[in-house]
Length: 269
Length: 328
Image 1: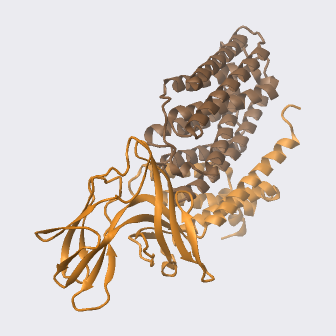
Image 2 (image 1 turned 90 degrees about the vertical axis):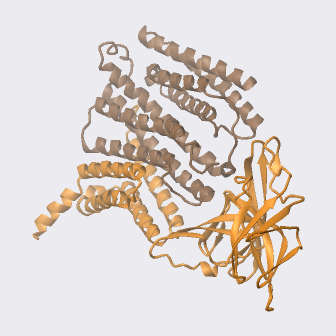
């Protein structure tokens, strides 16, 4: 299938982009233009792959694990590429972000690209709105994770001199806080849009199904981390660990819950 | 209590450290409710109460907090959401019902779960199920449900509607949703031997195609004195073909097996059997649809409060970050 060929080439381009970014950090080079071009080329081919599959199946990438992973790699890559382009100061953080995406890409390659059945309750605009907000949330948290990774790596023996071109830790920490604030807004919007969809689709706006519960826990942990930052003068390293905690919870919610629940949302068949 | 002690208490309750503790307790309560098989309302209500107290104390004792309008609106919206959810828990209703084709809903539910203050106005709600269309993709994958219903609006006009999946029928605040639960319903006329008007009734066979090979039901015939009858629908056609696209429909040919005691009857539409107390006529085969009903007057207010909260949050961060751009 052409869509798979486009996807594989896109993944290769992402891997080359990430490897180049890591090479740049390790050997103190600045291949930033090449990394950006590779990411954009990968995104174009990945978009073609998703559009071809959408055209063939008549529905978007919302049903199978393969589709969920593919669309999330695409959206996280897009969020990071936009940040990479708009904020040149933080470009070396690609060396932290890309390996995270490599793991999701590896998982995507191992997942079954077979077709799934779009449940009748998925024929609603609220599906797109809910998922769209979720993707912006995940993208914002991913950028924060990249910056937090830089803060934590700088504190290690090997990482100390590798990221000196980035702003100092307090400034990076301030940017992670802003990313988390944006993430908090979009996580809230995702929960609201999901509740509207759930009310129409399943006759209740909230039912504590596994995905609802873990999405709400992510929201609570995010609220906790923002409050903790306001209550105490946290060191950038402490702030970075909090960002990682939020990311891990969000990651488990987005990609782990489908393992413990037959469908992303209970009742979706 | 001395005023100074009251102020000290208020300040202690307004502490951001208490907010952190309450948020952790709330997260713990959510996890407990998620994993516990027991009702766990207290595990959620207690930390929410603490958070509400914490917020009210902050409002009373922290002028700087009150002066940050967007942040204040965000937190007040959260408080409104908590109060609305509590009000909803006291007045909600969830239920289930089944209606045969042509049958009118007359306020009776087969399953009900309601808050203690639910007003129970279901007797004022009437609608008729006129049947449904459901297509199936290969693999017995259910597609969209189109259920035709009619109802009388508040002005007394009879209206037609098509509901299903993400489109409920909303009457007097009650929201009626179609469910995947539906099937065949043999319909009978009962003619009492003592005279009187014949009565029409239906037997709802198990949901189809989920129970494709178990299309039988035990039932009672009201007014006949017969407590145990057994009915089975039998047909040879494949209605929902796993290999190709299909449509839920009545079988072109079928027979109805009816067992009364040790006597077995096979009936076609229009055929009748004599029973003690009257005559039972098999009218024909219909369909039935299972509905879920939901009532919660707070949902629109909850949406308004949630949207206000998120707009205020966006306003707060926008103002905060625009005042001091990161790259300056």
